Structures are given as structure tokens and as C-alpha cells.
Image (cartoon, rainbow, N blue to C red; front, side, top):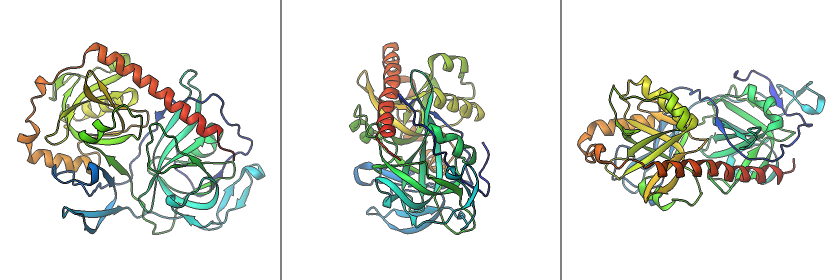
Length: 402
């Protein structure tokens, strides 16, 4: 996938909407820009610091202290300097069959100002991550789902219908900075949401995308929504928002971490998963299923570390209960980070190295391993989740008119 050039791109107005939409997504490649810094009102290295209900929103980028929370913890704004688009650059528009036209800059909007229906303003954002939405049965792609972040550190979901992917995707990459003129505000799905706003930014037939250049606009590189054991436990089986987790690894497929750990990719291909036992600070141990691409991503990263990586961060997790135990499962939108991948994992690793006695308080060897019946039920629910997300995607695509 190539990075965007100095042209802007608009969709083909003759693109058809997909039929029979069920989503089975495949995350796209992640190309980080710089070394993101993750900071939060709940300090990752301090197990006793808390925000309301234990919720934490974390942004990455360069930090600037702006004050303290009730516990006296310094809160940072975390942004990275980027560039903005130049007025009057050539644009490719479907209305003139690919001919170059002059694209004027619309009124710049923040994500919080996006309304349902057609929007004529201009959005400026970073593409954090994207993944394909596919029909579960036919595997036909029906759209591209995205996670976007703006200058105000608001994360929102984006969507490109299948008929417009070829127009935009060749000019986009994870981590890239873009501006979007003319788009449609769709209703966000209610099942398995990956962002807080109730609106989704959908690329319409009149949308014009370009890269952001020559400006001092600052946009964070990422923002995590961390939750702890209590919050995941309370959200079990509710099919609600998908939150992020950071902690340390106790077991990998029943094995204690070491340089002799064995992870068989052929076994992953057969079982479609890796099972971890994880723990945050001195809290309860949880089971974490990494499915499909997340499992292979983890396998590659843990092997690259020589089997010594201890800290893990996984995004957009679904909490379920198997055999009475809290279990977290990845979704197709999930990303996996280890020890030094992002600032959040580096912060936690620093805490872990200073608190090994606390971290080792629970003996990994005595953690109950998952029964075969639990695994089969987990696989069934993982596949059922894809169908439920598909229906939500189907409703979103066919209820919008643009």
C-alpha cells in the first residue's frame, strides 16, 4: 500500500452498495509513525491510582502536562506535530470522470461536531487502524472499517463502502494524516463498538480525501481505552463496547514464558487461537484468547523477542464467561503490542521490573487450564460474534442514503 501523494481523491458516484452484508474483518497492516507516547489520568505504573469506575483513556504522542487529577497524578496532553493540506490542490472527482478539478477547503470540523446525515465541512485526522468487513458466509468484502483520531484526541469510527475502497485505500496507510471534505454521518453500531461517538464517518460519493501538509496541526498517534478486571467482569456477555487491556503474561498455551517456549504456527492455523493467562498488577488472573490474525501477530512478536516478552497490550476485547471464569477474546479489529512496542507497554514494563514480587504473587503453574469444552464454546461464540457484528454493519450500510 502506497502512501498518499499530493493529489486528492474522490469516489466514483456509480459505486454500488453491497448486498447481504455480514462483517468478518481482517485488520490491515500497522505502520507506526515515530514512537508514540501513551499517558493517562490512571498511571499505568501505579496500581492504586484510579479514575471514575476505573476507566482510562490514553493518548500517544509528545506530552505536555496540563494539570492534575483528584489523586494528584499529572495528566498530559499527548500530541504529535503533523502537517495540513494546501488550498487549491488538484482533486480527482467522480463527477468529472477522473478529471482534475480545484478543491476548496471547507470549514474545518472536529469529530464532536459531526452530525447525522450529509456533512459539507472538512475533517482533519490520523488513520489509526483499519480492517476489512467481509460477508461471513461468502467472504465477499463489504466495506473497510477504520479507527480515526482528530486534533482534540477524539477517536471515532470510519467506514468506506466496498464500491469505494479502490478509490481511497491505495492512498491511505495506518498512521497517515488526512483531510476529508464532504462525508456522511452514519449511525454507529450498537453491538461491539470500538469508539464512543454515536456517529460513524462514512465516505460518500461526494467525498474528497487528501493528505495533510504544510501546517502545525497536532494530532495524537493513538488513544487507548483501558479497563481492568472489575470493569471487564461487569461488562461480561453484554455485547457492548470493546475496550483495551494491558498487563503481563503468566502462561502461553499452558507454558511459562522462557526462551525455550514453543509456539507452533501450524497448531495456530488449526485451532485458530493462542490462549494466554494474563494479570494486571496484583489483580486476578484472566484468560485471554487471541484469535486468527491476532494469534499469528502474537506468535511473530513473541518469537522475535526470544520468548522473553512479558508485557502485552491488546485492543478491542470482548469479555465472556466460560466455566465461571472471566475470559477476554480478540475481535477482527484487535491489535497486539508487546514490551517496547508503544509507550503504554513500556510504562507497564517499567512497573513490572520494579515490582516483580507483586507480579509473581500468583503462581502461573497453578492456574486452571481451559477445558476442551470451554475452547469449543469460545470458538462458537467467536464465530457468532462475527455474525452479530455483520448484522449491525448491514443495518448501517443499508439505512444510509448518500
